[in-house]
Length: 331
Image (cartoon, rainbow, N blue to C red; front, top):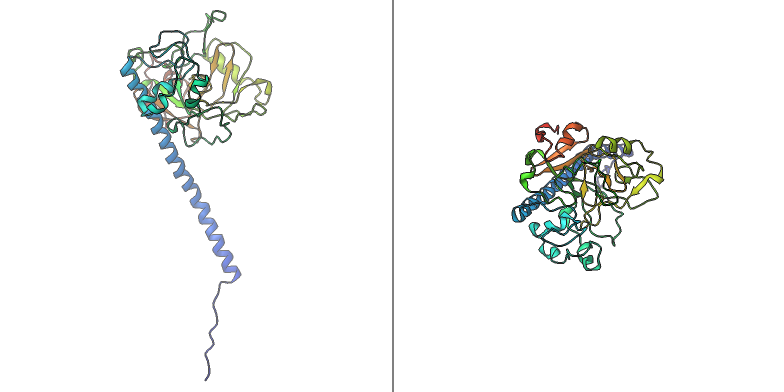
């Protein structure tokens, strides 16, 4: 009996290569869309977390009839004497984080052993998922990406030995010994920044990382313009101008490199320090040249790095007489 023979069909090498090429093209077309969707989700999570922190500050003000100061250098606060503990630590009860709050001793400094357990605890609400930081040492403490607005004056602190009479007072919402009431924000809650973003540093003093490092020009500026010009005049590759690279940790510390930013340079611009007593920490993020920002009324907005500097500085002041808010931000 004769058997029929059937030819076995298969892909030729050319056909296989064509299929692989088509798959590669499709992946190349789809990958950016997938990445964009993921970043959009991260950005939304970041915005929601920042809004939650701002709402916690509003609830704090409702309870104490004032916002918390970014740092305390005098003994007038109800929660304790002079302390380097941050706004963020004081907001924990209003974020359903009483367990962490109960571990904080406000009567001692942030790095006192009594505060080690709280300092080393990560608070997910303080972190933006778009921050790519991977080099944070585990022993420095939990990280923070949401900084409070200290205004447009490059002032960090005065002292008896460094009174700086030519430098005006801070004009933001949160700063050393501020304790502001809502009534002090005369520009309007929807026209005044409360929080914005800042990326964590690389913790490496042997290299220059322009986006996250804080540089040290060695000058003594009195105004926002002078601080901006001095900061942008330095050579970033000169490691002698390196100030701090340990940015963003620990969240419990009330400090310019951990919890406060200024409306002096545009978003994603440089940050500089001018010791003693002067600073210009700048908001930045990984959101494609933009930063998220929350106004004091709790509304959140995306601010482009190209925002008009007049507008950017106007929304950084609480009582400058400007009423330039979200409607002036081009998203």
